[in-house]
Length: 110
Image 1 (tube, helix red, strand yellow):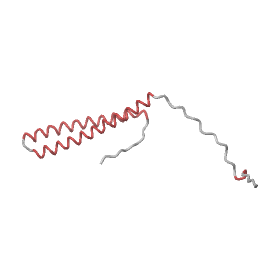
Image 2: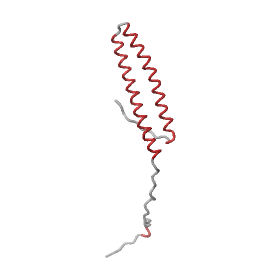
Image 3: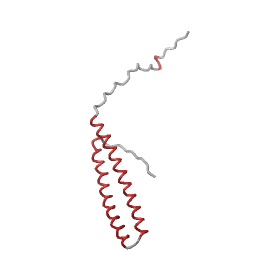
């Protein structure tokens, strides 16, 4: 089951955080290469079941890579939009008359 998680970090740290995702993807590629070589060897030795199991492992690693790439894309698009958009002017807080103190409460009878 896949779940979304969120956490906060400084805006300026976003590229560095996405770079971590990319490094994880590079590590996944190494695992994929190793598994592909293993599958090739298993097929040469006619170990079909082992090859099928490793192909499934490859597919799962690829799904993880795709998820990290999609997350990275979404994060960077949002980051770029924020960089390009002018800062919104903050509206001053609404001015309210001060609340009366208990001693200032006036009761009108009518």
